[in-house]
Image 1 (cartoon, one colour):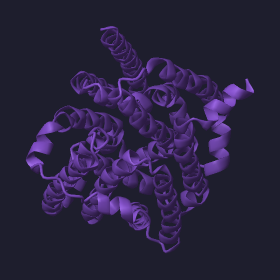
Image 2 (cartoon, one colour):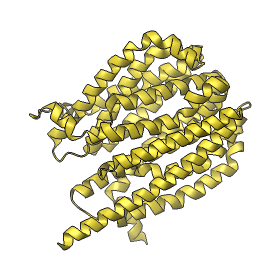
Image 3 (cartoon, rainbow, N blue to C red):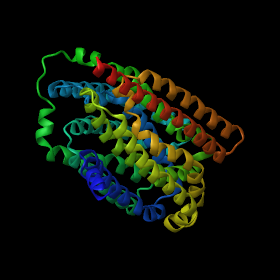
Image 4 (spheres, helix red, strand yellow):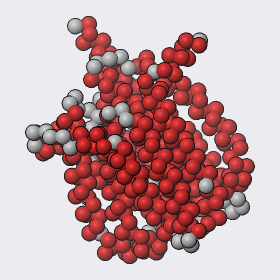
Length: 430
């Protein structure tokens, strides 16, 4: 038993996940532990405006690279991977120009979303999207090089600077704008530090490659054609409460929901992204070498399930006490909303890290269809909530839809992996 545990702990995949996960845990601790102070500096409406800004910025950031950053992990040769990264940066530049041209429409957009405070801060979407796109590309480049320590350092730097700037702007009395300014300033500082500490990797990103950039973009066109719409629809689905419910229920209700997502979903998202990032590189390499995946992969998933499910049950039981203690009076609705979303969040923990399977095995089209179905179900959930004039019912139905779709995705992932193993064994027999 001791030898088995030692083998598990010493495996490269576990160590790499450990680097990212430990950094995520510390980063989340820094971000979450400061919320008892932030909830006394900022009002629920301020967090609602931040959530709305991040929802719009998140959607634009996904469009801005057209998912070409995920293709960086696939080429056999480094110089081709570097050219793919430059394709992503070129697409990003074009989108930043388009976003800049929409700034004169900021007042109309803010009025449409029933968020007047957004108008004066809309221009910050340009640097926010630019920084998010640049890090998405550089993060994939560092992942390909297995620079997980540097990626972890970025996460810690961004979290630390985010905490400090939120506190500073709050004490300065910069209500509404302070939270959004911090969301732009902290990644700028973290990216600057990351590039400075990885000069060699940054310089190699610009190595020459004779093939025309148009050919490279066309070779990996499945990513903008299928992966980007799928990821975009997934992100849009996650941001529906901000985009659809704010005009009907206001920034106050959105503020409670934003806090629920911050305390519950954000840590889950960062942990699953750490596992996803390492598994993506590990499985992509195994497929290139035609190695077996299923036995190793099955152990990973079962261990995760044994840990996640009891943890979610415990959190559900003690949640109201934790939220009241942590955030103070007036935030009780946050605990109620988290409880409504707990089944969905459990499925996110267990299924979201496997999303790369569609890209490794070229099944982006299938999962794009599933994401479209998911979007339709979530729009219907939001619509029913608006129809019955209940924010809570909108969130409950959204959670039910998410749980069902994620379970269907899990079945699809299992089928794809089993088919790969069968084809690998068939080729080996020949």
